[in-house]
Every structure is written in C-alpha cells, then in structure tokens.
Amino acid sequence: KNMSTETEVLDQEVTPAALGAAWTVVSREALEEIFATEDIEERIRLTAKILGVKHYDDNPRSAVMTDFCYYSLMFCEENSFEHEQTSAFFAIMLEVFKSAVDEGMSKDDVFALFKGLVLKHSVDDASTGAVELFSLPTVKKITAYVSNTFFRYLDAFVYVFSTEQEVKTVVVELEVETPLAPPKLDEAIGGEVVMYG
Figure (tube, rainbow, N blue to C red):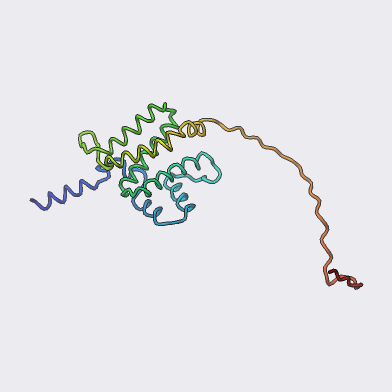
C-alpha cells in the first residue's frame, strides 16, 4: 500500500465531519477538564461555560438547561462512554432540548428528532452522513436514560421555558428594636460583687 494514501485515509477518519455531532458543541479539552475535577459545583460551572450560560445562579431557566446538560455528561461518564460518544450525545441532547423548549415541537416530533439523531450516530453510512459512534447496547442505554429522564419530564421543561412567571415586588417596612450597647468595663463604677452559684 502507498504510505501517503494510508495517512490521508487516517486523516479523513479523525476529522470532525467524520464524527457526526461529536466536537460540534463541546471539545475534548473541555470534557477532560470536567471529568478531571471531583467538585460537582466546579463541574456544573464548566458545563455552564460550555453552554455560554452566565447567569446560572440567578436565572432558573439557565440553571435548568445547565443541570440537564450536566446530568447528560454524568450519564456518559457512568456508562464509560468514550469522549467522542460523550461529545456527540451532549450535542444531540442539547439540540433535542432546545428544539422542545424553544421551538415548541410536539412530543412526537421531539422523539422523532431524538430517534433520527441517535440513528445517525449508530450506523456507518457515508452517503447519508451517518457515523457509527453508538453500538446497539449503547443505543439501548441511551434510549432508556432519555425516556426515564428527558421525555418523562418534557412537559415540565416546556412549561418552565414557555410560561412567564409573575414577579411581585413587595416592600415591607420592619422596625426592629435593638438593645443599647453595654457600657465599657473600664468605665464601670465600683460596687459590690455578687456571686451566683
């Protein structure tokens, strides 16, 4: 075999286009940084950074999306996904999540989107752009996880993102009596000492 042809083929196999949704949202470096830390708050902060979320603590919608994506990453870690699989799954779930909450797709349409994206990453077919990142057992794990988490709570996700919460600002004046400060000991007046006990 021609050595340059082998090198060209290897280069083609590792390009991002050849890995479907892998590396389109989260990089290998970002995944390694998340998985290298044990601190959950730091992992969530890093996930928010990937998503471009700047108001995790004070915006409930940002917190919901970030937590959803964080737990998708943890699912991948618990099931020993390779980084390419994790990156692709993250991108798939982010697209499905945004399609459901931003575009108001029906449950059936959201499921069809999910199914299509997972299928596109489960078979190798260059003519359709499909790439095999997920084996059949992995697809079964993914489907069970997404069915028991995302699709089970899809209505709640849609509600949070589609319903404006009424904000009431209430101002209440509150008077609190505070005792006077005790006199300094060096200004104390001598007197009889009483011992208790």
